[in-house]
Image (cartoon, rainbow, N blue to C red; front, side, top):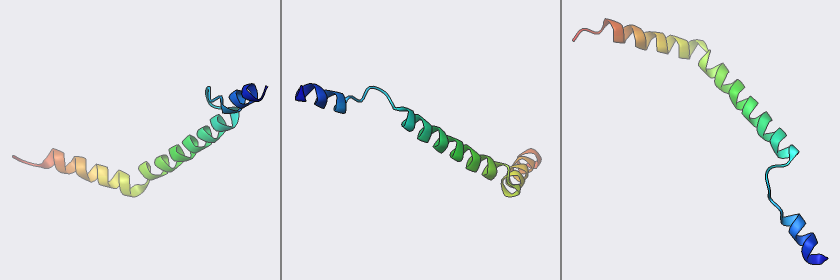
Length: 59
């Protein structure tokens, strides 16, 4: 009986519901931060400037 109880306590088959919830929240938070950074004026301005320089550079 003790061995069976130990096996059930050590069983790591997949993630539990709480682990899925924490992982989902962490992924959503990361996506929100990434979206904020990418859509910020400094990033958009830098990318626009980079593209303009690439298009106007003469070889």
